[in-house]
Image (cartoon, helix red, strand yellow):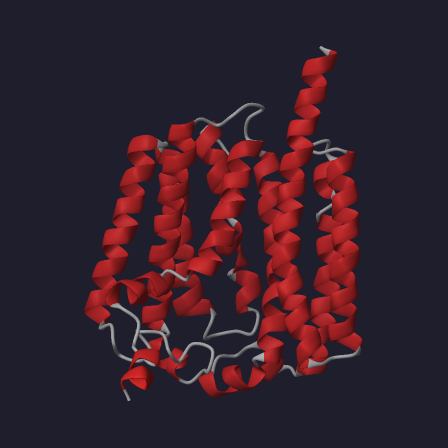
Length: 304
């Protein structure tokens, strides 16, 4: 009995609060922000900006996800994937979650204002509002196009990182935002496809539930084609070179392969594989941008 109880011991309060920040999702967002920091300069962005910017953006992202968990507590309770969240189980009250989100978000704004710059603070705060309130409260329960319309808030991290270093958001930063914006629908819709029963129980108007699996598969395929074209823009405008172009082509072939299987030969396994690949894809694509950026810089130094 003692062993069984230990195996089913509920997570600690610290672990429950940590889970509210959706750390795995936050990690990818912060990674893209850090890449934006490095791309904004030919040298090293500086430890203060790098550390404070990362911490501040992470804290505000975590606060936004905590609000998301609060707003969707009843919906999460109906879904197997999210039913064990502390807010869904009632183990964290609304008041506790609001206080946690306010403290974490406020600390993030303070860090960005004091140690980075006001532009990054305000852009990150607007992103917080866009995700926590406009997307979660207004768009997500209202339209099956929620992830498309609300995708801008989730696509902002590279611009936040760029602003942290340059105190500006030039065209190059918005190209990175555009890539994530176009990447988000096929990334999220394949998840919604193999979790369609969960979403049907939740009452949320997700595309596989409202328009069917065949239509959703077609949209995944079409958005993947659009994504492949979008990822070539950094090379087309001279922002990146052949290293990035080669990496983008190889990664795009992989994404197209997964999306085609989802579109024409659907299985839950194919959708799961496509979802996993989409995360690997974005990580490697942005890593390739970074490698290409510093290779070009080293070449320019050697040839100057």
